[in-house]
Length: 154
Image (cartoon, rainbow, N blue to C red; front, side, top):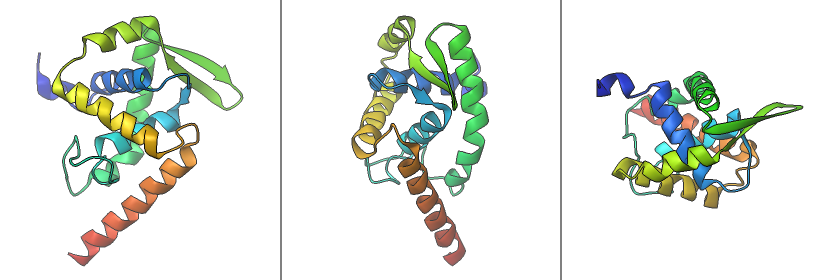
């Protein structure tokens, strides 16, 4: 398999979403919450949650957030179709929750990246009220502005 084709793909995102939903107990997450948790988790050091960012320290890392919605949407479709997550309709759209099949897939994901991502997600869940995406989005916006100001001063 061409690993370069997998990185940054809906498939990679789908694995992270599965790991995330497996760590989050008894909460159905919508698209915005999934995007926010994932972004903060992969850049956890920037949010003072972990010692290192899982995806490094690229200069444009905060510009990734706006594009994340399309990637997550594609990944959610994959996960629903293969039965690893279930979706639930509500007045605001859809929420998602991992299925028993999805939990079995997560059980087999034991590489170091998966384990670090689990730790990052748990850190996000401890810091934020993940049932409300507003605080997470506010924090992402603050970090984005600070990043832009730092770039301007360099």
